[in-house]
Length: 416
Image (cartoon, helix red, strand yellow):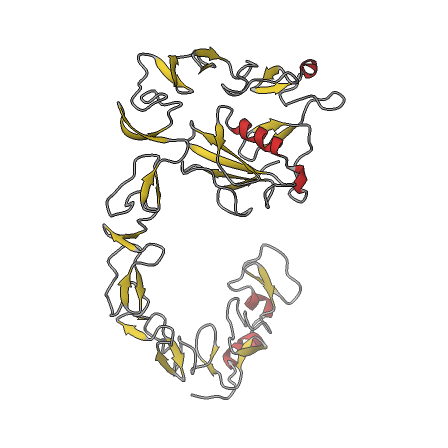
């Protein structure tokens, strides 16, 4: 192995005997013009006479060397080997370890002092690779000894379920405290809509566990025709369950409220929801929203009152794809007081007009939608408000309302 600088003189003679322009064009294509003396190599321009990355030809790297007149000159301690890079350190290059072309055979192997060896982080030699049998679940404790359970970890050379999923069940590591398929014990599956909390299957509010005509179910007594108002009370014929009462099925566009069919979009006694009565100050109902009679002539789409002018309340984004109407300007996360409890309530009702209040943390309005089996929480700022105002968190799992922990948390959106 020589340590003296080496020059590829054959390439230099080629440069002397051929026109530089013709040589530079070999193997290079251009979609743009390069400065004089340079050619296009891929998407960039290079001077093949001096560029150590494209020396004499596009993509021909000198590696541990410089480019002189289109030929690689290796630095002291480097050896000239065929290929790219041309100048390599045979003491440390895994592709040329100890000699040109002598590549290390094992995956993960490194070249140390000119000899191939497994690094300290992967100290064990298995048939085709360097591994750590202390941590590798495919070679745990010994080569080829794969951990049998899905999600199992290799800890100090022994297969074991990790702390986050400590229980081995049916070929996999699970957490019996929260896994709905193995709740409290392997094979104990929760019912549809049930959650596993502290190893016990439970129905999230406002759902209840019933054993009735539909079997044992986790259901909403306000809307379940097989368990209407009470477990086991089934509606008959074409009846539906509305607010826990069996009533006749309503025509398209109407909903049963307390035994009567109403239009939630226009009925001021059931505006946007069966229990939502428009107050005296805003007695008109349109689009499921109460608004002042003075706004009727202006053709307002909704809102709680006319704005100064009078003018219609502007539409606000509830963060989940619906609009609510309020005279307040758009909310600004930098101004916590720009989000109010009233706006949060309006946003919730815009998302689910027939929804119901759900327990959540302070400074947020929790809203349960039985039709979607989902819960959402809109948080507001100002005195007594939430620390991250202007965020709404949607939980479609049926487990209940969850307040957003940060603006980037999954299921969290910005509302205005």
